Length: 384
Image (cartoon, one colour):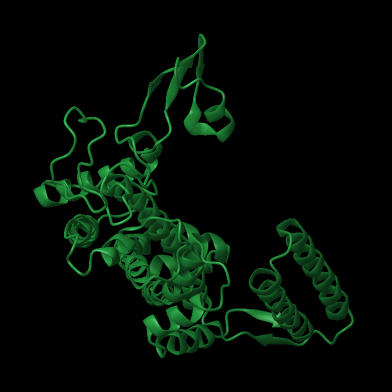
């Protein structure tokens, strides 16, 4: 348990909890489809599918609408565009009121804020999750084994290298150029792995048994240096131009490629520090497997530092996604995000499109930073 008497910390946790709840329950909070309807004596749920939406009689049905009866992409025909949240609206329309106004296309800003919350958290959490898994795995492996801890048969190494090059080429061609069937791609990759594994085993069996050391630490350090030598924003824009069709997953993949180096460097440094402790030396002398030492003794000790980095990274990913959306790149046109809303109001003609999304981004990042700072000072532990 994390001890805390800090009001700021508790308030930050509360705000992040609100963001998560809004993102998870966004279909119930905002949408132009009824949540549940009673039509001809039966209950149907139109918000679940288009088929259910067509199967109820709008005249005789009794429906419960979301709290905000608009979707982020809904453009009204009967009202003026660009309504201020303080503008007078038709009397008797409390339920249908635009509480945060509308944009220049007539879309409800409150509904767009709710949809944008889901996009921001999805990109932030997923990109940091993949960056964490990839970067920490490489960093701990390099820090523990260093340059001489991993030895492999020379023939097996050559075959594995060829397989890595072929696999990378297949991934590039499949997802970037041709975009073929996903099942076929995984079947081909599995077949390639099995063939290379069999070929490597057969060649290693009849080879002279010479083994070479894989300099994992040097490879990782040089890879991090190469990654850090390129400015992040230019590399980001270059990677976005590679994808033909914009999507949320493209942004997640790109942020992952940009962020893994930070986790790898942090995990490597902490692993080197913990590895020098006496209990790790004792575990090695006792013959405990390396994989158990890494996950049972090293990882719990470096996890507090990594969790702090995760919170900071989520905030950075949210800002990065908002920056891309503000520039008009990355996300599909139909997706609503806080950055896009701010871009529409940047001429200050519609001030509410800048204030409300900007305030949401500010509070989310500030809360994550407060949580990170508190955990960093509290020195909590994940050890059993």
